[in-house]
Length: 296
Image (cartoon, rainbow, N blue to C red; front, side):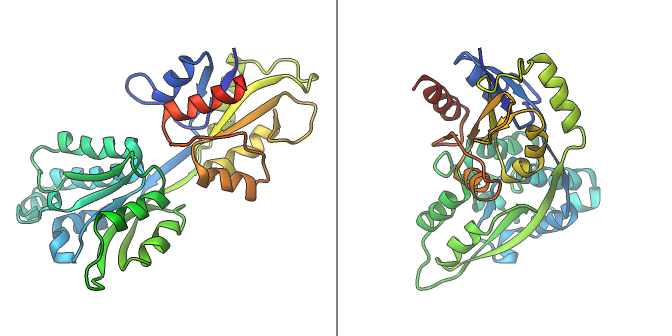
């Protein structure tokens, strides 16, 4: 049975979808948190939420990650805990009237959950959630937005864009061709987890690498989910494995990635050979692509 090292934090509640997908295909998955995110500008986002889309000339919101969804939720939590700002949450401020454009099913699901978490603020939560499975990466979401609400008579639209500190400029560039302006707000920053080396060592103790003198032995797979994670963890993996076509006397490790953006980073920046790229960023498509590679 081959191992799969998932470079992401497992689900906090219930079975992890990625782990279950690989287990059903006969693999032993190991999830290790790689990055830590720190919220920033939550107070700024709170003010924007209270002012509403109409006052700011916004026709929608763009959210490309679950962490950005959490930032919206954290801002609502601040509003709910402050009696003064709670009274400022004018019901004429209606975020439910504008679309929230999101990347992937997981981000869409997280956005829907805000409705349940804040039932007393129906006018401050995402209601119209678009994109999701139809826009699994930022580039597809950008084209989806342009097709979903085309500009009329060269009218310029403005969307609130919640970002992290590692966002690429692909989405803004595409939207600029369709007369879409962005009110970008950084709501989180990401860095490597200081506990990752120890967490990796602990995980490998549960799934031993085996005879490192036999370079033909394959321990299994590593799955990358983001360029920022790849840059941080790869030096640690080099210490233990033959990675991405590098010739060493260590056990080999095949590489799978969640999407084309991460694949390009591994190939172009880290000079690694990528064996599998998921056609869609879902547990099922990722695990099936890995299984298909192994059975070929």
